[in-house]
Each structure stands twice: as structure tokens, then as C-alpha cells.
Length: 207
Image (cartoon, rainbow, N blue to C red; front, top):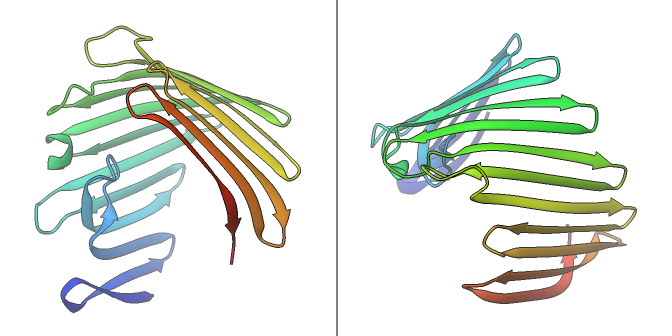
């Protein structure tokens, strides 16, 4: 049992027992569908090939759920909520299939209060030190491919780097070099046609 404190002196509690975990923290438990919504109570566990979790907000009667089932290389997941942060009831069903170094994913999402009824198909492939991924999205009433995300990353020895882009010409380039002794040099560059360009360099320290 782990305890701490949160608003108005009420306790923060995390309990693990026989493969199940119960957490309680006022507005401190992420909604499983959208972490923009905060819950008070969460329960997670697994049984056979199924892993599951539920959360609840004791003040606003919000709740969320998530369940995953694995069958060899295939994993199916369903997640949903009735949180006001997503306009009411919402759910998402996704499937992932792994074939060696290739992972293929597909999902269908429905949100009653927004236009985010997305359908997605994507893949991720690892080639030694290089990994590439691509996801094509059908947003609401649009067409498949109207939105997309792509990335490539490299990691070997002390160097790691990644480059990501999307249909809005937004790009992100991040590089990091491990200097040893719990320190690393990093460089980050972003470009957005509405927000402009951003660049940062520095050293990360780990304690």
C-alpha cells in the first residue's frame, strides 16, 4: 500500500493484490479513453488472456473502461467512456497484428459529441537500428488518407534520432547523444505552418 496526500487532506491510495491494482486519488486517475478527463478511482487486472481496467469519477459520474485480448500475434482492444470531456459516450475498437519486425494496426473510433469518428490503418517496421511507421486516417466524414502521420527513427549506441511529419506539414526532428555519467546532449526542432518554427538545444541530466 502506498499513501500520500491530495486536496482537502484526503488520502491518495494504491493497493495491489493478487494481480489486481486499485488506485484512488481525487482527479488524479487518467480517463482510459482521453486523459484530458480526470477520474477518482481506478481498478486494473488481468485474467487469462484478457487484461482490463475501469475508472470512475465519484463526483461527476464519469467512467471509462478498457479491455485487451491477445491471441498469439493478434491483439484486440476496446476502450470507451461517458466523460463530458469527449462530449458523452465514446468508444474505440482496435486490432494489432505482429509479423516478425512488422506490426499492422487498424481502429474504428466513435464519439457522440464530436466529429472525431476516425478510422485508421497503420504499420510500423523495424530494420536493425531504423524504425519507420505510417498511419493513414479517415477523419469523420472525410476520405481515408485525408490525414496521416509518418515517422522514422534511428538508434545505435549513444545516438538516437527521430523525424516525424503529417499532412499539415508539421515536422519534428529530435536527436540525443548519450554523454555518459547520466548526461545526454539533445537537439529538438519543430516546424508548423501556423505556429512557426521552434528549436532547442541543451543537456539532460538524470538523477
